Length: 545
Ligand code: GLC
Image (tube, rainbow, N blue to C red; front, side, top):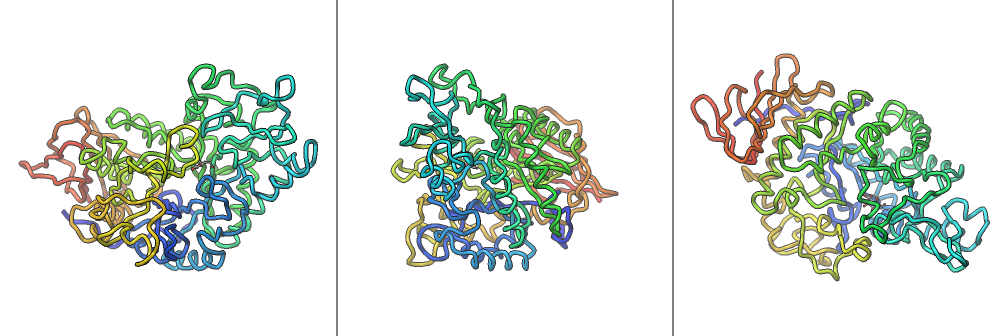
């Protein structure tokens, strides 16, 4: 098999995000430079050459702002500073300068739906009392019942339990997540002005984009109407409607006004500054409303992440996502894993089967047009850590629901024989979550230069994606090819160059012929006559030029 050569990183053009590969850095678990057991900005800075060599275009950094860390930094107390746990503003500046010098762009996470309960605005709201101007920036309300002892409505927190907490003077405040994450009142002009200023603050520091946390949540239906059911009344949690149904606290039409105000700010900076929505909407059509020339550039397509391991399921979500993005003129995004969801090796069956499928899924994702998001560690084939001791789990949702996202947040193994496998400097603290002993064989050092390793598979695929004319362009859809059931086969083409991606989800090996030469495969192909045998749960790219 030969890999294409002459990679040309797509870094110089304003439309870079249309076809970029963005690597999600979960800051506290990526690399620990100061040896306290928690990842930091200096750690990222030291590992930038790894990311450049991997072949990604940009990094999305999860929140590193001043925070009590109740929800791993998604509870922000100061939007314009770095938490000492992760470093300082000068560390950030040094990191972004180095990243840009290496041709890597930086996307930061913006958390506008809620602040930390330690944010000065919330502290002031508590101190000022009912009816005060300070309380207007949040969603305080009187309770129901004879003495206001019941929450103002039936809304549930995504982390479980009621979305309301009562304060000492008797009023309640809304928190769609943890009680330490009070929701802001986005109908308040000061809230809007503040976040426009925060955008400018980071744009001035050189960031190339924003990932907008809970982008569908900022506006709540007027009058805060009941949902009509809750886990206590029906056993069904309201959050089960995420991405499937309407909720009065998500995806309200007025939320789009906010993005229409943000877009001119992004556009006023040079170099193609972008924003990607973490948004949940009832239908792909409603999700597409977040993207376009006057709103955000992208929205994560979680349907791809949620697709089951079948050709029909993938084909359906891919077709829908591509159709919607064509209508709005913005590219779609593809994502297989992130810091909130079980790692896809495990979702696809765990163990050897899960890894085979995850490797095939990587070739599927990286052959699609649009922008791909790679979650740190997926290039190593890391599985979910399922057996973390409960006392080590830190996800606030764990205490309220028993479900925990810690298993996908375990620090990255870099090298060496002993945990935490080069995550921190020698002699440093153990990592904040322990890496299992099996990860020694999955470390970056253990996989580098090893033919057939998952890391080398990602490197090869990313190299080809950048260099191959059929993949490198920002336009052009996919052409599905007729094939036997269970085989996904699509072609991308530019001029005379053609690349065909084949994914075998049929459960039996398939002989393939007539697509040209194989240039990368997730499992060994064997020659058969003029063609090749594609094993079960494997994918390959074939080219013709
Ligand atoms: C988003 C984040 C998640 C966080 C939540 C609240 O869904 O991805 O990690 O807990 O928002 O900010």
